Length: 90
View 1: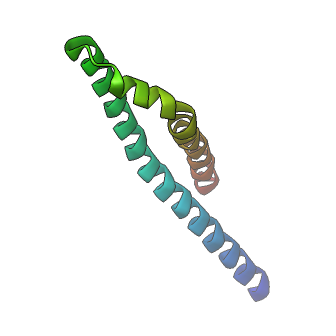
View 2 (view 1 turned 90 degrees about the vertical axis):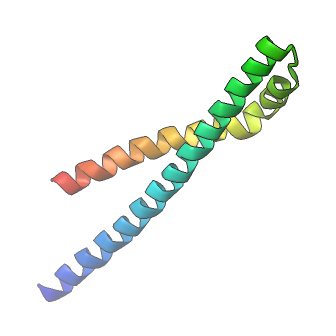
C-alpha cells in the first residue's frame, strides 16, 4: 500500500509541476497578447489619425510569426488549464 501511495504522490507532483509551468507560460503569453493588442491599436491609431500606416504594416508583417502562435498558446493553455482544474475537483 505504501509503494502505491508513493507512486501516486510522485505522479501528482509531476502533474502539478507541468500545470505550474503551463500556467506560468499562459500568464506570460497573456501579457504578450495584450502588448500585441496595444501594438495593433497603435497601428490603427497611427493609420487613422496620423495617416502613417508604418506601425500597422509592421504588425501585419509579424502577424503570422508572432501573433498567431501567441494566440494559439493562449487558447491551448486555457483549455489545458480548464482540464487540469477538472482533474483537481474530482
